[in-house]
Amino acid sequence: MPTRSGKADAPPRAERFRLHHLLAISDLKREDADHLLARAEPYVSFLEQKSKKLDALRGRTQINLFFESSTRTQASFELAGKRMGADVVNMSVRTSSVSKGETLIDTAATLNAMSPDLLVVRHPSSGAAALLARKVSCSVINAGDGQHEHPTQALLDAFTIRQRLGTLEGVEIAICGDVMHSRVARSNALLLTLLGASVRLVGPPTLMPADADRWGARVHHDMKSGIAGADVVMMLRLQTERMQGGYVPSAREFFWFYGLDEDKLKHAKPGALVMHPGPMNRGVEIDSAVADRVDVSLIERQVRMGVAIRMAVLEALAEHGANA
Ligand code: ASP
Image (cartoon, rainbow, N blue to C red; front, side):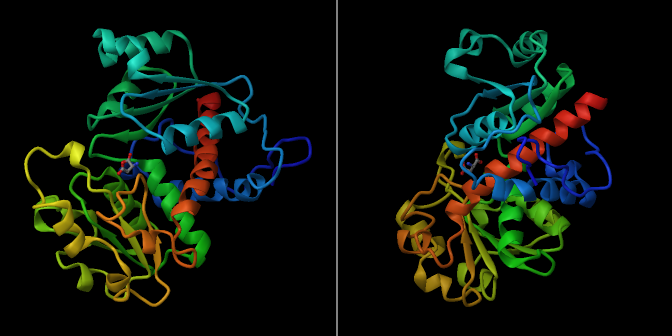
């Protein structure tokens, strides 16, 4: 637990974090995921205190490089870095030289010359974070690369469920909606199954990736049978910005078949928990009456847990970097 001197005691763990970067859940072993979740644990109560400043990352520089718009992820990484005592610089595409035609590699070389310790990257292309990681010497954290992965979202989702249910072993989780365009779905399916949960992917055939059966999850196309008996229903945003052409006839029809409302939620286990990574399209993939139900909706809690998880990730990677 964090002490009065402002230092966080080391959470219980056998070893230092194994990896230099956090690029994808597919790179993690079970012990890596357990390590990060355990490390986030003490930060939950710490973040409820009035004074929220630690010095674990004092003197370290964190650059947040966002090539795609973001509200919660960027703010969450910024807060996490600042609460750990790092110097945090935010760069968005609009204000950087990328809008003047600089390539991703040139940007990486420029940033590298400034010797950051941690680089948090969001980019519309799958694989961009991994490419950057090969060009810089600091630790790179993938904050979402195209349709590929969003590892810290999955970690915070797993953490939120485990906090509420006490375990992920045997928990039935339905991930529903636009699975195909969702990096959140891929990262979550991989992480939740790694942690012992049983995952179903629910959505129309047009929004289901061809390789979905290789994600370790069962695929359903009917919403009511897909969420039947589920402990957790995780909704996804309909990601129209990644769609070329008509994947769904209309938002209204999508809501009719796949939008989570009280009626469909009755098919899940009584008291089933509801999640959404945000931003939500109310009335498209989720009804406000469900999203705002304080008894079952974890949506606000997901955002809160995001800061604790990102503090843990930044700390684990910075510690690894210091000893590399
Ligand atoms: N915020 C999440 C992401 O960046 C989910 C979404 O945008 O729908 O992938």
